[in-house]
Length: 261
Image (cartoon, rainbow, N blue to C red; front, side):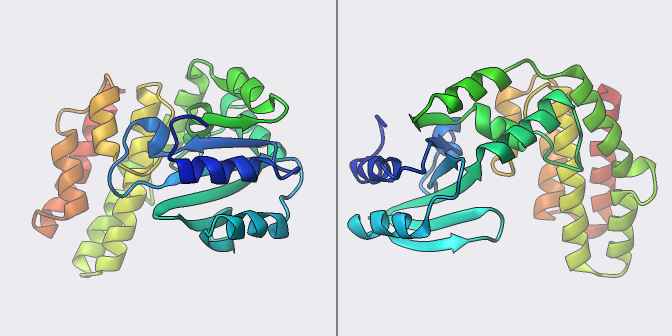
């Protein structure tokens, strides 16, 4: 647990002493090299059985941690602060992890957006504690070249939704603009971008790094980028163009990535 602030390191050392805790992995911006003043510590806690809440609370109390215990909005999490340092503890089972990896990397099943996020999260996590060596073994197993079949399936599943088939996102955004339905405009643009980035990362054979700082990541790490990528993504996310111009930028995003394919 080197290179962690002392309060976080001491806290995680005690967390690792809970018998049910089998591995602790640090992920997110702390391992991606994209930290900023707002970054927290995303720590994934892997186990075969549930880590008892009473044991977790005992560690929190020992370190004076201010934690919300047992949040289940997405996954099971404990969220809060160790001193002034924000931290998220996300609890995952080995079975769930292996099912996700098998579905994505072996069976090459595509989703609508964010297909390879769990894969990217796991293989790029930093192992802080690994009681049995299972985390290291699984990282090595799934740190493999991006499967061509996976890229193909992601593109085939997501590309038609951009503009080619009903009910495609550009048509939905255009209707929402005509209705002055700003909630729907934002909702459908977000869906468009979820599929768009899934395609773009698949095209570059790069596991999807998640929803944050994507323009910066694409510019830094992708070899193949549509010509007007940054201009168009900025236009449709900031809505800094007249609304009637939004479909133009969405269409150009779709057309340029299709040309690259």
